Image (tube, rainbow, N blue to C red; front, side, top):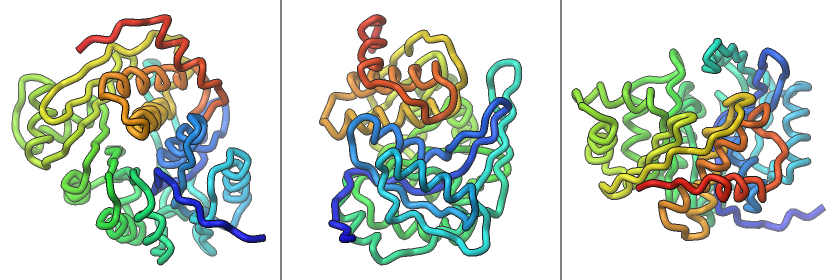
Length: 304
C-alpha cells in the first residue's frame, strides 16, 4: 500500500483522549475536536498526537480513520495508557475535569517528517494543555519555531498549566483563543483593567498577537484584530452540553480564514457552529453543515 504525500492546510497538535461524561464516554481532546470539525467542514486537517497500546487507543484510531482524518502522525506509546478525562458538570452546565496523567499524549516524540508537514501547512493549532509535560512540550516548542500561522488555544485547567509556559505560547501566537475566565486570569498577571476590551488590548500589545478571540459561552464571542474589536451575540440554542463547542468555534473560524473571509463573517460562522455543537451531545457529534447556515440565517443579529 503506497502512501501519497498530501499536504494538510491545518495541523493540530496535542491531546487525544476519552471524555468520561456522566451519561457517556466520548472521544475528545481539543486538537482532535478541532481536526474533526475542520474535516466536517470539508478541509483535510492532520493530527499529531499519541495513544497507548490499549483498547482505548485502538478505538480512537478507528474513529479517526472512520472520519477520514490522517493518522500517519498518530504515535503509539509502548508503556503509557491512552488519555482519559473524567468530566463532572455542575448545576450551571459548567464542567470540571480530572485530566489523568501521565498518559500517552504527554509523551509526543519528535519526528523528522514534521518538517515537510509544517512547511506545507498554513495553520498550526495547539493548546496549552500539551505543554504540561516535558516531552510533549519540547516537541511542541520545536514545532512552533517552524509553523507559519500559530493558533494557540489557552486551556487553563488547574493544576495543568504554568505561567512560564503560557507566556512562551503567548509570545509565539499569531491567533490566540481563550474564554472569559481565562482572559480575566491572564490579564491579572499584568495589571488591573476596567473592562474586557482593555484586558484583550493589554495582552495583544504585550505579546504582539495579531488576532485574539474571546469566547463567551452562550453570549457569543469577541475578536480583536489589530486593535479593532468585533463582537457577536451568539445564537440561541437549546444546550445539550457545552463539551467541545469552543473547539468547533475555533475550527469554524479557521475554516473561514482558509477561505479568506473577513473577520465579521468568520466570527458569525464560528459562533454558529459553536452553538450548533452545544445543541448536540458530546464534542464530535454528527451534523450537516447546512445546519450552520440555517442557524445563521434564522438569527441575523450580528453587531460590531
